Amino acid sequence: MQKVLIVDDDEAMRRLVGRIISSMGLADISASDGARAWQIYQDNPDIALVITDVDMPIMNGRELVSQFRASPERKDLPILIMSAVVAPREISDLLECGATAFIPKPIRNEDVTEYVCRSLGLNLETPGSERTEGTAERTQPRSGIARRPVPVPAVADRPGLRL
Image 1: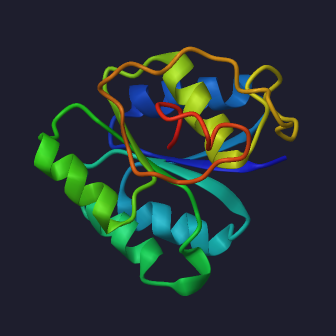
Image 2: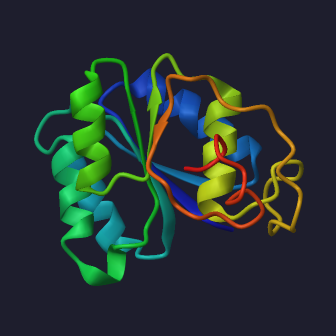
């Protein structure tokens, strides 16, 4: 079972995202700040995806992304940023820093599900299974989602559906 690390100082948000992740058949692990998340990752290097808030105590989301990207063996780890308080320039900076995608709060279940599936190469219709060619038949996520171009099997040739 693939593990997803959820990092947010808001316990209700961690629980909400955790329920979405669990409903997809994935294991969710939570941390309340970036420093704790980094420690958890050191103990669980098989974590497949990180979903993090930006504004947190001790170590914020930007610092956490930088920490992961400073290590060559973690350069491909997908990191999704979710936040309600980020200006367009900050979103761009986070993506340049190494975040894979940005999802604005309030989050929508379908956005989280779609980006988790893409990040982990899962079939959108049947989360938990490997993606097969031509299975990404979903509507485009809301326009507020920023993404950096990352080729993803089965959707890389469809512009609006890239991470």
